[in-house]
Image (cartoon, rainbow, N blue to C red; front, side, top):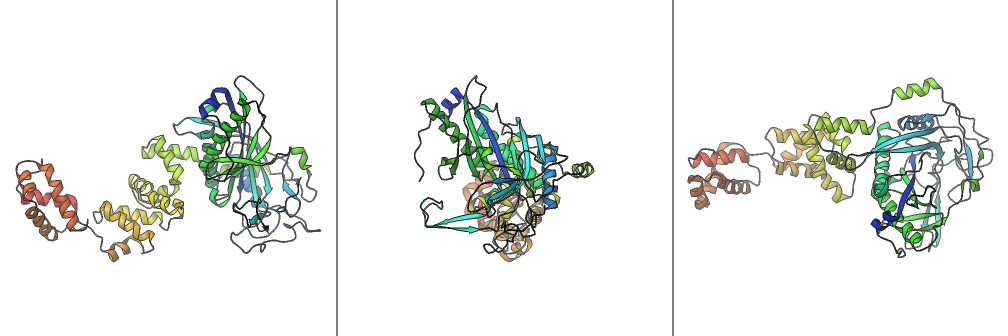
Length: 504
């Protein structure tokens, strides 16, 4: 349980103060080995099985820079419209924490590899907001602490802690914004949109899966308030390791309300780190925030400087893929959808599956329909991401083709998808095994039509009297009798033919 905090309303907070944000996003790169040694980065290995003297910081061990890590950093910098340093170096960030086996983190301080960039993000209503990027720098991740014996999983109340250093040394890129001003009441929305856009960009570059639910991308939300008309920033708080888009938005909103409550009551904001709580969207105090000088940065003596050749940087620039905002604008025009619908597809993680389904032969509207309908519902119910569902874009395209050919109707297609998700085979196998093909043979349908007419004489008389729309009731009866496998259009034709009525 988190402590109850008195908040002012969001509207009252914005009436008195301007929010200023800074977002620090850590991206875990998808390299096969760590940033400064050859240890594997594979997930779910036994604890402490992927370590060596270098990533454990043992005396005499020397680090070597991961070339793919540097390449990934340059690609991210270029995609963020940054300048790429002609010369930069690593530094030691000194602090003690049990999950830091070296007692320092190899990072970059005043000489990052990328700096002075920007990222345009699109809000729900289509407005584009430009977020200025201060820097993107290379560093290594820490190990993992597991606190055992308490009710919350945090160190408070735990009986002991376990340390796993498999993650220590995994390559990270930290992307830091300049102060984000002028967003006003939309500040939380801007924060969410920025992290969402950054996630899509990272995935497009293929440098990380950027799965927030797996810790591959984490956001620290820095926030301060200042009274309207004042230029000086207020004291900031830093909500650490927020790991979902929704939580980024909620954390920013909560901190705006909390800061406003403290300031309005004459209190003082403490510069500190804070923990975010998913269950109620609140934050609680962590520790007083050190200033950068407290880390006693100094150049890493065991690593040579990094000096990316200009020719190599330009080669990487030429190989950048189409970036997410440009891609979405192109697809939106091609598909003829609204900005809101496109944003819904982005939020659902459906863009890539839809594109792959279209590539596999499905019409765009059918690909969107199935991924944003039946499959999105299944993902929500199972708590999985769309691309984690056990169905391929090719299978979805095959379902769409079976509907288009008349072999399936929508009701049967949903059952086919259900069977594929349940592991019963590909769409054609599920159709065969479940006997789901649409019945369109006149002989087979004729008996069901005759029985529906005989069983509903009143409705049949209405149709003979000119109320053709009443045929829907008889079509429904036939569909029920055939377990939804009848061709509804052909059933209606047969009903009107039997009753001697022409289609209106």
